[in-house]
Length: 215
Image 1 (tube, rainbow, N blue to C red):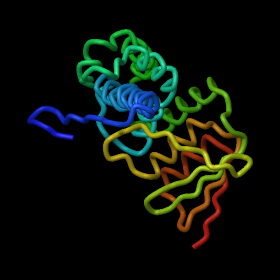
Image 2: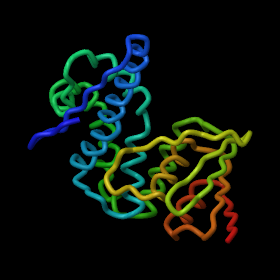
Image 3: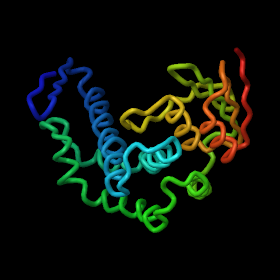
Image 4: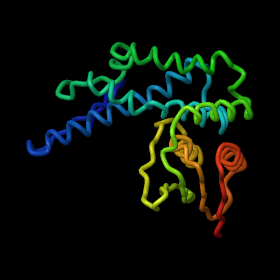
């Protein structure tokens, strides 16, 4: 890795036997940065919001995760990993079609601009989003720690979390976004101390939730 005044440059080298696997991983990483990280910037700029409060940040970050899988499949097809990749170049010049799709998502909020900053309306909007997707698991257990969280499905199998690559994202926001993304029928949160009022209110408002506090 090296950098100048404008960019950081990363290079990858590996044995030929691992080339295809490394290329796949590189394409996946680039696609995720473009379709989740840059999408976060795009939505915030379009909606004219920065980091606001817990509810607004969760709303914007969750909007970034919805449809991110399909977005990454679309973007990965245009990436030539054998050539130098400039992320801002892809974002500004090669992703116009997908940004039009993101604009349509924003219109749902723009047409109801008063949603942003209003807790109850934000929760109503999130309920609307949840009704449009399937439950990705029936029962979700969330183990909350001070600097991390862990997800477990119905069979207690660990679930890999998804991340929105947002600046200054805190653990509770990240956990909440994963709960929304998985849209479970039942949520059980295990923690050593009760989470923030915002986290508790949002989970109880949107899901059948119980908290198990073990100090």
